Length: 363
Image (cartoon, rainbow, N blue to C red; front, side, top):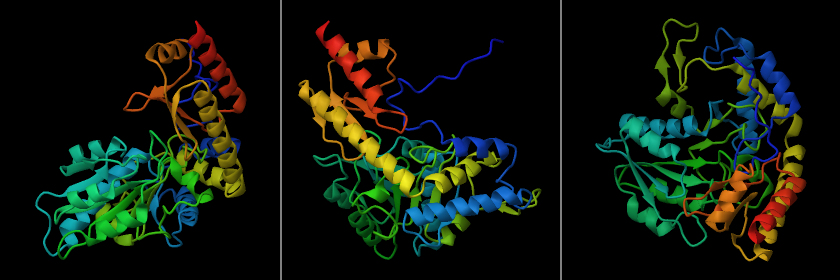
């Protein structure tokens, strides 16, 4: 078999993953063969995971955080649905017969997977004119069978932040004598939002669970997601017995996990939190604003960037020409060009991209 060469990031503009920090790479190699899925056996990496959860809690306004390093946002979102379903089943005075989850249409596609796997109904509601959850539509969709309301903090198509405190109020007022849970999906936005004025985390609202991924803006290696919970009862609702392991129960969705993700997340956050992340956020935000202005100056309709993500309407032939030139770009569900200004996306990269936009536009 020929030796494959990994793709470089020089023309990757649509990914929410990036090149890991050097310290994260080194830590990943050292802990590659450890298994945090059996913490009683692999005690060293288990302690590192506790440190990661505590650090993520510090970032998100949750001093006494519970959780673990997941494989990514999909697993964490599935776990949020699963925990809400299980807790409603076990704790509500009238358990739901057909549990449902209410989320804006901007929600990540992993919630469709969760609904399918877990047998719950997913109710998606419209967003407003600024691509945020429409609160009236959310209120109209929750009922006594709603176990979870989802808010997005850094949507994958437009980088928008839903009104999280208001969603928490709606969730917790749902039903007659039961309290639905609120989950915040900050998989991508969580490492940028601490440096903004948005209300999005556990300190800003009565959030129950959160997804936040170190392997995105956090610059850890893949896979290193994050699942956080306010209460220990949430993890207890996910736990199953593991009789043949030294650890007698397990709350994670995956069983065996490489310690590489855990160790890399710890190393990246130790190296970058908070000043390194703040600096990168400022650089990435400036790059997104530069690109948005450059595209607008050329007559394209651009969605005003709120986080380092640019969406713009460009003609299909131009989009195809850019793809053919090797630019890894994607579309929103409405068909706009979508560019994510991750740490590897430099201003020089964007200048080359815009130069190609000019070249192909005039061809």
